[in-house]
Length: 270
Length: 323
Image (cartoon, rainbow over all chains, first blue to last red; front, side, top):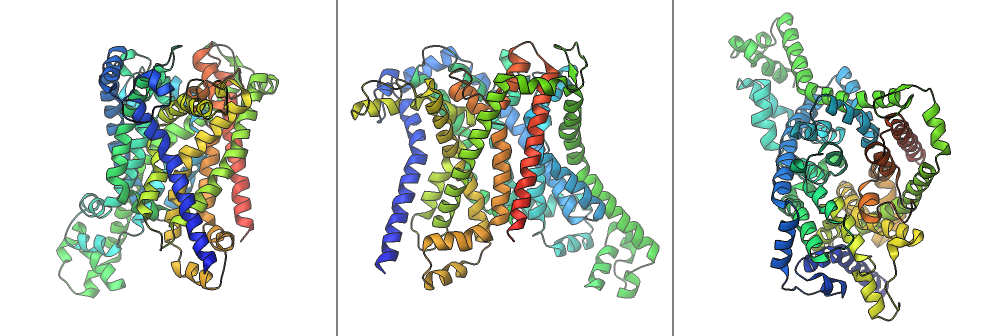
């Protein structure tokens, strides 16, 4: 009995330490954004009063508004397109499956093995030949359809009751209507999970925009944050404010969709 | 069941006329049913076509092109056939060999630490008697919500000469003055590994937690009654039952580690020297920083593809064997 008790206490200690380590760098970033660079270096860990100064300095140095608008534009458009295309495919592979479609599906899964960096040179040449550099299209096309999302939707579509489809057919709905009116509303948590993952990946993507977004006016938030470290002197306060602004959207989305995210992932792992 | 299916088909727009007739008629003439099945079959193809075509154009086709390019030599767009020249060049290229070594070092050290940690945390959080479960889970997953560039820069700042870690160490009297963690090869690699573990453990943990939902909790309760220690429960129950999920996360992490880019670029800038440079970082530099050598870069990236494929294959084999 004492042994189980000791184990329990040990478990709480481990979990508390791991949680603190997980949260600390983010807490430090938050505090640094409100302090002067000198104070940050001294290890100050409480809120400061320099937030407004850091804000003004950051906006004066960098096109933050433009980068924010761009990042939102690219990420939202990519997420919407990817959700529609991949869920259609996942639904198609599961509901109408036969051996030909299953074969196509296993070939698609091979694309999971293709490292993005391996395709970057041909993709860059492709988009630059098509004069599509610095465009939203170039940002979204390479990751608009991913084997991971298709697989996730397919796995979750397995739980979609076939009776609903049959009942809908009797009611005279056609196949496209069944997908949009029956499948999408039922699979809300899967969509939420897929949305969280896709939006985060799109927002955080750094390599691909760095390759194709060459003009100053198409800069994204991660690129802007990375640019801030180029100089010799680092103003920690300003830098961490930029990091904070860059992390805020994904953190908010994660908190809003956390519950459905867990549900959607559970369905995908089954 | 068969009847209801027949009725369902009959209810479809094509056969609407027969909607209210009895079962035998609802099954309808064979010809009509076939065409309906064909129609559904076709609908299926239409549904999956856009995604399939996009993957073919954006993944498979560039992969083939990368292979063709890798056989060509020359600068910028002035290319000529060079056979395996690029592949030979790789093995003589000291910088590339360094980046290969670094990438594998991260893979061999970081991935096992991270996966074991994630599994242990998942098992702890799966405990039904645990209080504040949601709080712990959220805290441990939170790092995954930050972008790769952001966390790389946070760690760069934390471990900077005038960063937080140094100010604490100096404050405690451990060090006399700030240590340049990112200026020494060994410590710079350690910082990258710490950062990677910090960022990705929670991510893998979520997959394990999801996998654990599918295991009957009574198995754990039975083990507890039988007096199994947490260690025994971990190795005898959690690991074997989660094997498919572990395999999936192992392949995903391997794939991700072989492609490490953001951390190398933003945390250490590949330095000091090239001691923390990753393969992807070097490929990027050969194309976009120096005079572009597309052929050589493609050869290097094709090698990454081959490595990913080989490692995934080995992992699947190992995963199968223990059944």
